[in-house]
Image 1 (cartoon, rainbow, N blue to C red):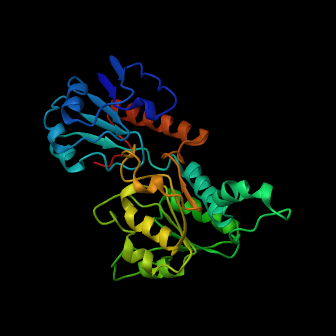
Image 2: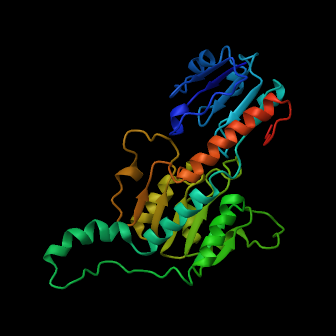
Length: 315
């Protein structure tokens, strides 16, 4: 039984090799070129991938492959239909980053509402020349009493809601766009946009959610709304977010994910000097609890497949 981890450096610690594995190959990174991926997996029975894509054209050239373990909760990097056609089982690691990402989102809320980027940079530079003991540059906004809109009601979205409510925030869960029936506990897509002070995204990337926040959606938000994305970069139209920040309609944004990761040479969002823009390199999942849970989840998935009773199966 041969196991290949295509991008093992995406996890800060090495996974233990199962006793039943004949060979385990850690590839710190694998180029996204299909031929490189095929070469890496030519003799693999099991593949572990975090973000390296497994497309239909790749899978059809890997007759030996029987199991893919996605080292993440989101599995948009794998063509599930092609896996079904080729008899490849796919499992993910659901909910491992619930605490880590939720705490990260709360940190972003504090940073944006309290304008920490501005006061840490611009105001800090002005302080030595200030005639007073403090520098008033941009409003500091309350968290208690503010409305948090959440798209996505899985483990992470629910954990964010629990923490936000503990801070005294009002929480709204948004229904899918254009859904005629509104489920109990949800509000219409447009209602969430119009009523929220902060909006945070926790939904999977699908064809239905790709670009779900664009120019039209931002224009429907009330002035000063703040946007947080810790899910998948393509959920938002980055130019629309940039335009919203520059125009002032968006009061701030915290983005832990971008449409291309790593980003291309200095994309416009990375060049933006907006005083209330935070961009971090897809890291909110990775506190010690998140890393530990992810590693245990991968090992559990591998063991279950070896025992002939796969768990967390998504295809």
